[in-house]
Length: 342
Ligand code: AMP
Ligand code: TRP
Image 1: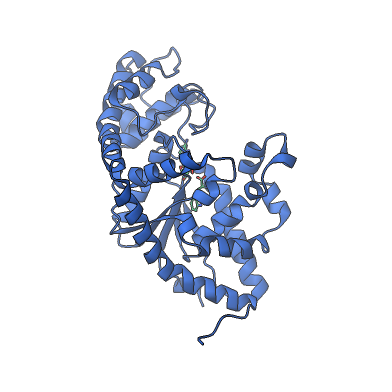
Image 2: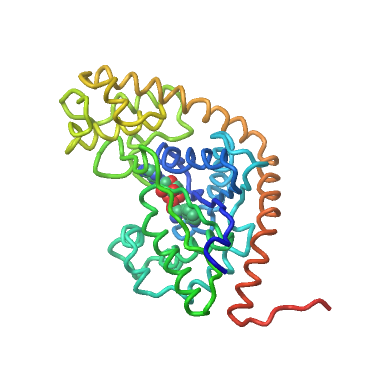
């Protein structure tokens, strides 16, 4: 099989671990919607099996999974055009992950910066699942033979590992079965930073709620967080080089550009020379305009949880039509005796 034999297919996932935020939206979700508009099969996943690599309260996990699904739809994903799934409902993800656990090497996993960050100083006490996390992620992608994976900058290393796993599997078994997936890291906001500290990425787990704009924040909360965002005393430059060494200013400009769907150069041509006291209300207005309808729609969808559950059930059914044959072929390649019809 040559590489060109793989049909283009888009896959990506987000963890249902609460606090879906502006970084998730600009780095991932908004891009998912762009890919849906292209003439390609798109599959988007709430990765609940990944979420439990660190402790999740069961009730919160359920709530966050449904809320994430509502967020997907509210942001513009159409459950007919895209396949929307909850990871644990498509068992082939976990099944292929086991095979990949036997392909990936300990040393590869130990180099992952997300592992090092999340396990912290006490690696001995981290879950085995947290260590194996990237092998499950590779399985998510490769169980669809997905070729394109839109993500934020922080996932680049995991996608390189996904390629390494595909290459080693193909090499070890002498096949060309898994594609070498392309990471798609695009747009002005592939790494949205904390509003309180321009050196830290905006994150679900930051203790300070003021550090992030949550997709469930209302217009007042959004405006207030932007007004209070950390900045420096300088005005805004009219060229990108004037943003060097100014991470907080750079971050707000990137956010503006991504929300307005303009380039950073275009934005600076308009706002260069302004003070933050003038720019922040512009940013707040734009953010409210783009985000408030999404949070309103999320809240509306959350009123009908039975409908969300049906969408995910239907998504899993469609997904399994793709994943079951790929898993079966994988098992055959590996030499596992498969059931026959009785
Ligand atoms: P997670 O919430 O860790 O499951 O991330 C889901 C998606 O959002 C991934 O594609 C991440 O790369 C992306 N993402 C998370 N945080 C940020 C951020 N601060 N800036 C841009 N993208 C992000
Ligand atoms: N690891 C990703 C994150 O934390 C989530 C994820 C899991 C994912 N499986 C994936 C992203 C497959 C893209 C493709 O952001």
